[in-house]
Length: 116
Length: 117
Image (cartoon, rainbow over all chains, first blue to last red; front, top):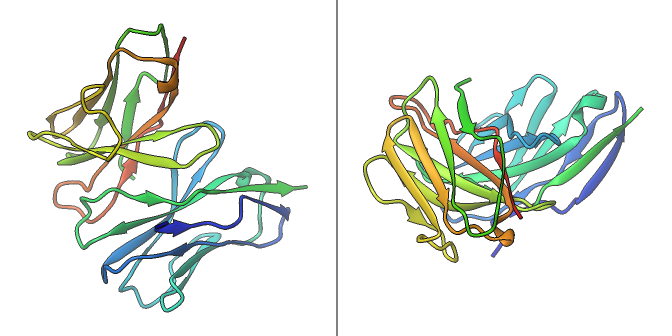
């Protein structure tokens, strides 16, 4: 079964507007972490934001915020004031367990294109 | 954040030859490193988990005799693709972490693009 689901293969957004990238997850482990990464055409994985399963507040990092709805098992990424440089692939990922020694499981990704 | 390097960044080799890819954590020590593979227009798939001083754990479907992993120190893991074939052409990315004494951070290397001709 898919552990991380990203249902939007591609998204378009106008420059300076906000955009939400969807992510749902599935786990029976009460301890887990949720990550979002940006992958430009160069291939590097750029860490954007992290949310722990026990975190009470939604994570924010600059223009990025994570809309964490635990009961719905969703962890959507919101990018505010989109910029042309935000055009890239975006991956949602999850790590199960309390230690950091497990690998991440990635979703299929969403390609975001920011239009001028 | 911490830095993970990979070498080489790009390699082209002939079918039947072997290729070694290095993953280094430059400013921290990591007991665990992970190797992922990414085919064009697809997501990252975990190949194996590499623990310093012990044998790597391979994911189902990944041939351990073909993808040799060595994690000889707390800062270096290597992936050797033996007898490479065109279907092994892919983007290989490592990640390292968490740092000793640190939290749950995972840091990714810049990736290695392998083309087998």
